[in-house]
Amino acid sequence: MLDIETFDNRRGGNVVYKALAHPLAAEALARLALKLNKAGATAIYDPDGIAGPLLALSPLINIEGIYVHDTLAVGEARGSHIARPLTDLPHSSAATVLVAAFDAGRLTARIKALLPATWGIVTLDDVKLPDGLVTNVKRYLDPVNFATNFVFFRDDDHFATRLTTANYWAGYGATAVKFFHRLFDEAGAVLAEWETPAPTKAGGFIIDSREVRQRFNLGAFTGQLFIHAVGVAGHDVVKYALDVYSTDNGASLSCTHDANAWPSDRFAGLPAPRDDENVVLWAQNSHAVAIPAGAMALDRMGTEAPVKIEIEIPAFATLPLDVAAFFPGLKWPAQIELRAGRHLVRPRYEVTRRGRTRIAHINVERGDLQPDPGIKILSSALGRGFLLPFPIMPRQTYKTIVQPTPMAISEMNMPLRVDIFDTDGGKIAEHYIGLLPRDHNVAVDLDDLLPPDVLLAGGHAELVYDFRNGGDANGWLHALFRFEDRVSGHAAESSFGAHMFNTMMTYKGEPQSYNGPPPGLSTRLFLKLGLLGRSSFCVLIYPASAAWNEKSSTNLELYDQEGLLLDTKSLQIACSGSAIVYPTAYFETEKLHAAGDAGYVLIRDMTCRLFGFHGVTDGAGSFSLDHMFGF
Image (tube, rainbow, N blue to C red; front, side, top):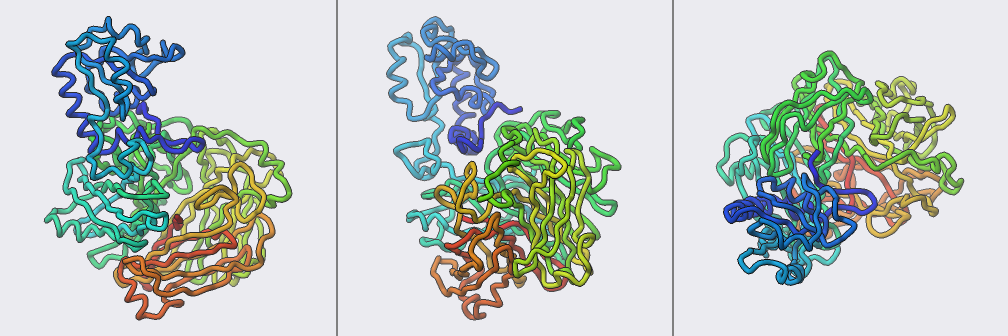
């Protein structure tokens, strides 16, 4: 496992990791390593405990030893070294001392008197980003300086990709946001690098692979795009929707949510193929150091018999992995776990079936989470507690299938029920799925639970915990949702986790809020406008753990690509109900045209928190669907 600290749900993200892993910082670290090694061995003064991640991301530095001033830290393992007392540093055989800290002037002055005059002293200030890419120059390790993410990016003779987002930072006071981009090819080589200003206001923003390929005169590529938002405020995460679409008149179409910006030890939710499917996992190295052969593995969920990926993946390279090659004969609804060793951000997988492809993502499997006995005895004020809502698409056209997915290493069982609601919020059915073991192979087809003439206009369902036969819960309930066109066979899939929704009382940070402390009782959801002639839509769900407002007070705000509000429409959704929303049904054609390709709809509600899924459709059997993001 790569010795880095990335993200945990108690402390949030590790800014030092992002400061060291940024591609430009990685290049500066490589130059620094050459400089240090040319002078001789290097001693590291490690005041903040980051020597391990530093050496993991820059392993070529010739280290003499690691020194600390904290007496309680003496003897700790830091990387492959044991920390020594700082007072031993003058007796070191090193030629240079590297102070493992940023903004390290005071620390340098503190130890300078200890050292022989011939010794050199350097700090991590040597690997800082250029000033033009730093938002807060007064505090380098401010999270806003590292609003970064990776994007699966492909353009060839069959497929193109399009990222859509908005300058949502303008809503938090940012006045001059720009994006730095670096495009890597499949081998990890840099294909292009450029900067783009964001709209001054909260306007929409698009990066289309076809335009990038034409602009830089590139050949076909499949790789990843690194994106860094500079000048931001309020949010240090780059959120986006990513469409993958056919350019050769094919029927393939899919969308997927933004990558989780933090590498994880494990990921879960990778489906095994059906008999007529091919499933490829796209392994994309997120760092400037190669992933050694055997450092990652795939495992049939729950079997604890991982199969190593015996291929080295170079820095920032992309490797397609055929799932069937690792598990011959393993079929859906079996699930696969990726043991990624913190080398990757949230990976994508691609399913090919009958000449159509769809791309989706797998999710972070928590290593810090244990069963929570408090969930079994929740206050009655929290009603049904944790809910995992998902749409039931109109049943004349679509099949809807749900597959519960273990998403914590400690999760050995899943006691589950599914509650089914019509669009008006009426509960029409419930089904006890059972006490599922970690290695279950259960996928619930809603056709098996409902008569064919029910929910023809759609509705939604919610996975909930049900302890009638025992079992444990951790609040991190996840599932894969698969939607299939009954005629064309085209499919889309999405995955997400449970939350509490719309209760005044709270439990351990739930219900979550988009901004500020819980309870989360408001909505800000982003819906892009179409895709090259295809119509966009979303499914809005009003889940309620307990009784809440009878109707939502939802506004659809149409913005153009410069961030100008063009129009507002309203709708009401019944508590525990849902609605399918097409912008073309609410806004005049002229205003949608005025919004432009990068225009969008912001879904706002100050009375409740809605949950949503967005997609596009060509009206001829191809569609996409994934969960929405808010800001």
